[in-house]
Picture 1: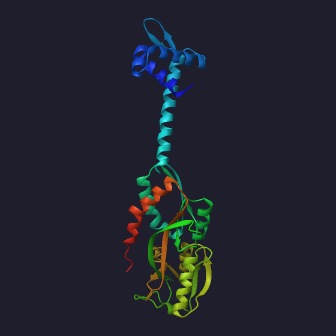
Picture 2: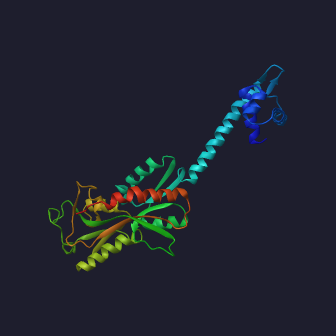
Picture 3: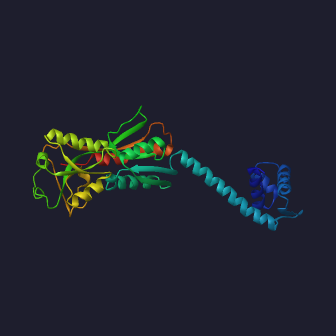
Length: 305
């Protein structure tokens, strides 16, 4: 049985007249009658009652008509779905993200993407920058939202900067400098315990903090290292130490943590999109194009002064 047999059958069933059905199909009546007989022989039942005066569907023919309609509908939907996948309008995309992006960057990305591509299933995975680089190489995620710069071997990963922002100092609410309204000198924190994201989890952030402190004239007393910035903020709120964090998350736990600017601030942090250079998925390329066009410009307008 071929698809054309179903189309022939449906046309005859709708017209209940072989001559009219043949005209609709732009074919002669005898070949059409032959095709219907061959179809009946193949499935082993009569689909039509034929007399000289009229043509009627048998009970089996009525059931077969319903199923034939469904088959054609399913086929049309399947064709449209694969075409949408080819255009990057359907399918699935796996996105890794650092925890600090969850406050503003990630929600904005998801809002714009779902509005433009509602038929794409989004798989979100919270991962450190290092974990995302590994997941990209292994094909476990399609897109990374991570801290930049990252170590890239042989240009295997492409990067598009979303935002570069200054860092601020996070202090416990009862810290002696918490009442200061003017920017804080970094060296004034030389005797404070520091909380950092570990170098393995976020090499860029770790190195930025350590180098900035060295330039200010002291070696930070690192008492705790953790994988994610939200955990860092929680530990600061518990009075465990001070921390340098991106300015974009300075409203987190604001009732327990005080955020202050740094005088002559040498600290910046960069959040970027990352994807495999050899990823030819239309879905991924459509995602990147939308981000470049509609989302990244929003964050390039941020004023942190």
